[in-house]
Length: 291
Image (cartoon, rainbow, N blue to C red; front, side, top):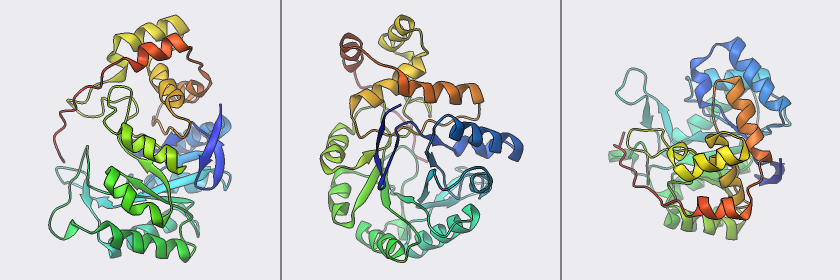
């Protein structure tokens, strides 16, 4: 598996998104995280609002300093609500969320914190007092970085204009919805590549919401999988790694076999003809209701 820079470290490009560990117990979650590290994963994406600290507590017990932990702020848990999250965009909420992450992770410094903006979908949108200027949010995160509580700043669900505004603050990565079948953010990816910013796509295989197209449904993906003797999901992940050198993946799963397959996607080589066929897959419209 190849490596690429992220938040000041050179790490393998296939990481792990820990959100699905919300639904497993401590024994299973700890075992899965330790298996990920054994397979070479050195980038794990989490948040305090994943299980209201449950996932962070698992990480606290299961991984060491050699793993780059990336958490996120900008939303809080909303137990019992129609959507399990509520916006938490105000500067004081961002600071409180960083402090909560520090506590549940049991660390003095989080290597990377992503600001989950609500400028673009899928998911939540900000209203009322949650409509906060990006500069005010970055001022808070920069102060936390100066205090040594976070190591690097990332942005999630951000527009290209938002990223351009944020560049002077020093942005380590961008997390946006992006896959083989949903490439609306191509210009944003290219800006990240030009600026030396890691691109960390979420929903890398699509299909996370009704109305969101699935990479694994595409005939070209399925044909490539048969030809290469791998799964369609592995083809979708491998395409992302081939598409741009600054891509870092964080596919999530609670299943050990899927974890093994996701990590193995980092070793799949796509030849020129296969890449051309996959590149020709059209971007599909995403008809996703807002949360």
